[in-house]
Length: 324
Ligand code: 2P0
Image 1 (cartoon, rainbow, N blue to C red):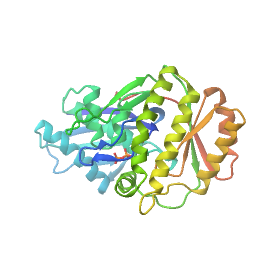
Image 2: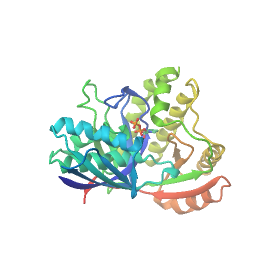
Image 3: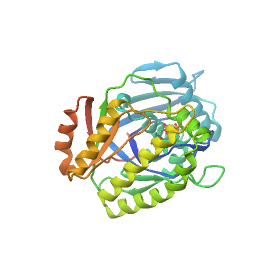
Image 4: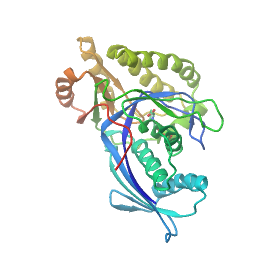
């Protein structure tokens, strides 16, 4: 009745932005990501006879708020499936610096899905764990596998064909992902709220959907060919297009700060000088820079010299879920 799992976070290359079913976390489009090597969640789940409710301990703090409720709602799905009414103690260690703009929900729900299902001896394969993790947070479906991963949107209503698949192992292609933390003060709109508002109100959302299939094809081909420049061009364009789509929402969803713009212009100028370097941005002000490992050190140092850059964290492709 007890199991421990570790999952790394991931960064999307082709973004997931919008659900067709909010209850089952079914996305409007497929997405592609890289699982990273540095930021992870380790979670132990133990179902116990004597508990009246779930207990969620995150980084040694007992959570009694909405975080605990999210975890409980997720475990309810497993309880329903297995017919158990036992509650669980969930102990999580989160090594995802949320200040660096990485969502901890991806590694968090991937580790929780793996640990909870194992603790109840569900004996799920990775596809089924991906389907389960997806129902905690969409991006968690991708963290089940290492390296380059695609979450296929599926077409069924029940979500049984909406899960992640590995495209290329972390051992097969090493690229560098630099997370650039910029100064920021404003509180942001959550991804969940931002994507909902975008679908409901942005006139550009149909443009996003009509081009994302083409982006997916190009990124799959670039990963398959390990063609970094082709990858980077599509990835950067896809991220900027996602943000343009959000800007059309009412009220607009704007995650960028002035430092975001500084880094965007800087990366574009480096590229004009002949260095293959590209960027992507998630639902926040920080920028993730993609480059080749041979250029990693000089780009890292030059980014740190920009006035609005507070921190740069270097990552590489990492592994999928593991059991401890
Ligand atoms: C992604 N993001 O593909 C996109 C790009 C942020 C920008 O997935 O509502 O935390 O829990 O399914 O997975 C962040 O959204 O949202 C996200 P829910 P999630 O990585």
